Length: 225
Image 1 (cartoon, rainbow, N blue to C red):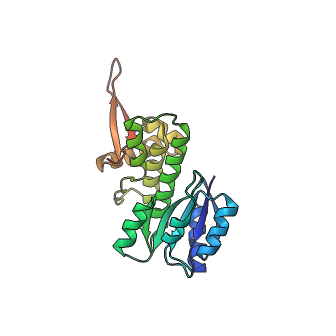
Image 2: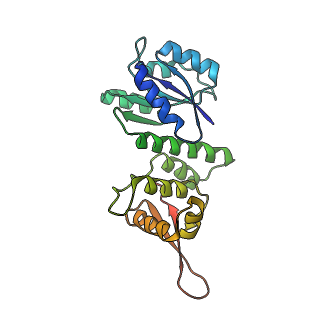
Image 3: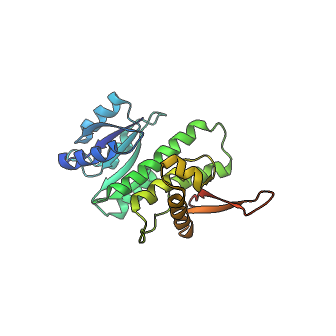
């Protein structure tokens, strides 16, 4: 479980973000903290790995909090979350290594997408001993997932996201039959959604040729360049 600290001076917003966090598999909510001082105490005591960080705190700017964190292997990553649109803050957050920058208000689906990508990166990092360039490209690409297309008639957004996430988490390409079996849906349903995602460039269609007959259609998550 990725221990994640929610930092926001608004108690209601902090509770909402913590509730969002608990809905994403692989994450455990720590805190919340409502000031930089509370955040420092939580980071020291709770082995925090990721911070959902509001920038405008009552006692200190969120980015100053990040600057002051000890430079060590245990230093937590952070996703900046703010209603501010100051480009200087965006630039500084990038320089300080922000995983991403979310502007309030945002939907749960957007945060879930970023958290899922972050989790996938952490899981893959634990299995790598020495990275080739394509490994590096893949890791960075996971943090920039393609935007899901707007669902057309006959497609639901949650199912599109579920099938996209199934391929993203897979170590290899998958057939519609394999996706259907994993998700508990019919093969025609899986095929219909996979074809839709392929048409919109979210997944890649691969043709596997056998000795006879038509090639098998297989699908792979498309990593952003």
